[in-house]
Image (cartoon, rainbow over all chains, first blue to last red; front, side, top):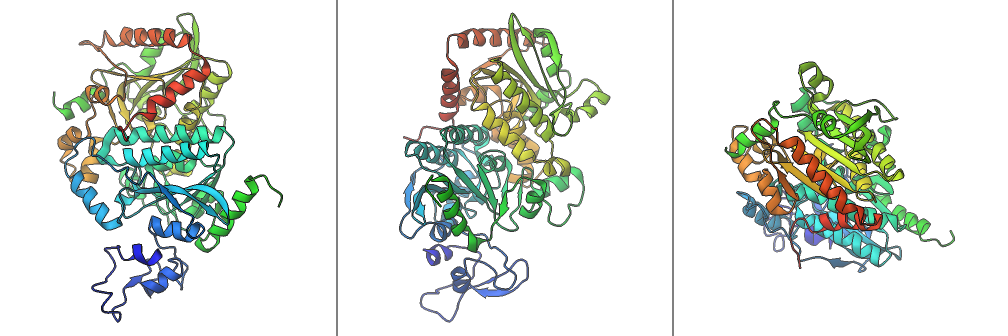
Length: 281
Length: 259
C-alpha cells in the first residue's frame, strides 16, 4: 500500500520506473538536504534517516502504517465536491487534485483497528488541495463521527489542512459548525477522540475539530495555528521567530498534549485506546 | 451595487455598531468584562439584560464608534480572550437557562503573534463546541461584516439573520484575491465569486431571513428586535433537547445533499 500511493507524487522524479529499475526516484530532506531513495524512505515511514525529519505523507500511507493490516474499511468513498458556487477555475483544480492524490477528496474516512482495538479513523490528504475542508470533507467527517457514535467506537484522526476551502465559500465555513456538532455529540456519549496533528493544521480545521479532541497529539515539527505564518507576517509586518507555531511551540504554550514521533504513534494509540476501553491493564 | 461595493457598504462606519443594537433592545444591560483567564477584550461585548420581559445573555462583536474607540476594540477583531469571554457567558446562559442573543460585526478574528501564542484556533473551536451543545436558544444577526471563523464563533446558532447589506464569508475578498488569483487587484472578481451577500446566504439556507435597513438604518434596529422576539416566542414551546437537536439539524443539512 505504501509503495503504490508513493508513486503518485508529481514532485518525485520517476519515469518508466517499472522497466528501468536503475532509475530509482530520490527525495531530498527539506531540513538537512540528505538525498534518500524513495523506496527506502517509504520503508522507513518517510523519516529522514539522518535528521529524523518527518516528511508529509499520503493519507493511504498513514492508514497502512497506523491500522492493523487489512483491518481498514473505507466509508463515504463516493462523497466528493460538487463545486457548489461554480467558482471560476475550481473544477480544473479539483481534477488536478484528484490526479495528484489519486483520491476523490481531501480526507479518507473509515473504520479499522489498532492492535486489535476497533476505532473509527480519518486521515487528511495533503496532495488534495493541502487538505482543505469543503462541504464534502465536512460531510465525510460528520458521517464518521455519527457512525462512530452509533457503533460506540472511539475516533482516531490525523488532521492536516490549510483550513476551509476558499472555492466553496460559505459552505466551507459552515462545515466547521457542522463537524463540531458531530464531535460534540460523540463526546457527550462518553466516547474517546484522539487527534494527531500533522504538518500543517491551520485555519478552519484548527479552529474546529482538530482542537476539539480529548487527547491532542502532534507529529514533531508540525505547524499548528489559526492564521498561517505568511498571513501573520503580511498583516503584522513582523518576522516570525524560528519554530513559531511548530508542535514544540504549541506544546510549550499548552495546546498540544504530547509530541509523538511517527515510529511510536501506533504503539501509543493502541495503549490509549486500551486505557479507554475499560478493561484491566 | 456591485459585489465589492456591497462589501464596502457592509463595512461602512455609518452602520449602527453592536452597542447601538444592545442599547436599543436590551433594558438594564449589565456588561461584564474579562475572560477570567488572561484579559478583557473590548472587541467582544458580553453581559446580561432584559429583552422584553425575558432575561437574556448578550454577546456582540463591537467595531467601535470613533477612532480611539475603534483602536481600543481592535476594529472588532477579537483576540482569543474575546472568545474565552463569550465562552464563559455561553456557559452562564446554559446554567441559568437564558437565551443568547449575538450581534456580529467583524472582519475576522485577530491575527498576530499574540493571538497565536494564546491559541486563537483553540478558542474558536471551543466556542463552536460549546454552542453546538447548548439547550438554550441562540439567535444571531450579522449587522455588518460576518468575517470567517471569528464571526462563525458567534453564529453556531438556532437562527441566523443578516441585514440586507451585510456580508458573510469564509475569507475577505482581499484575502481571496491574493490567495486564489494571486493578484490583490482582483478584489471585485473575488467578491463576486465568493457569493457573500444576504441574498446568496438565504438561497443557500445559511440564514433564515434578511432584515431591512432603511436609508439611514432606521429600520434595522426594530427589524432585528422583532425577528428576535418572534423567534424567542417560537422556542418557548420546545424542550432543551429539541432546541439542541434543531441546531444540529440546521447545520447538518448545510453544504449539499449527498444521498
